[in-house]
Length: 158
Image (cartoon, rainbow, N blue to C red; front, side):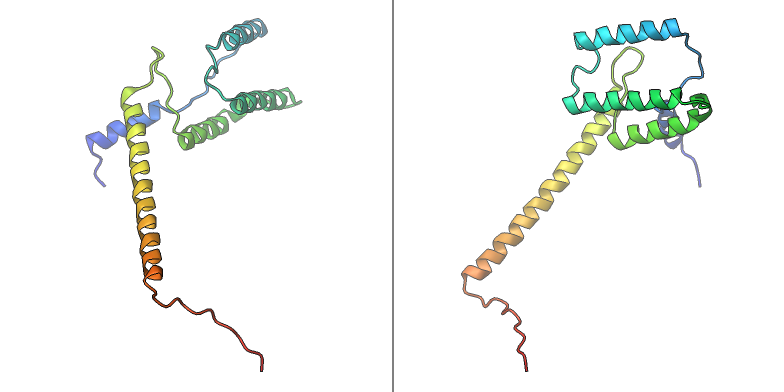
């Protein structure tokens, strides 16, 4: 199989778009500060401002579960970083989420691709619905013209 430049570029882009948990340590003081900063940002609407109430609850539940797992005796989440990366990347892929780049802007090309796919899916659904409507109308017209319907099968006991 020949690898084209465009295929290689796409593979590199996909690799760069993947979630990858960093292998860094964080002190308790830094963690506490980050939690305080995040709570201020949540209160201001900078984080999760467009979340639905259900999404807010799901995010909180996930954080609670991860915290409980990490707090369990003899558990070191660092040993499971690759599995966590796999789960997070799978979730990102099935949701179609596009992460902002370093400047806080979503990748315009990725957003355009996602929008084009959504438009294509909507067009396919509209065509399918139109065909179903046409079939239903044809069936109703046939019935209105007095065409004999299929008689129900009645079984007689002997």
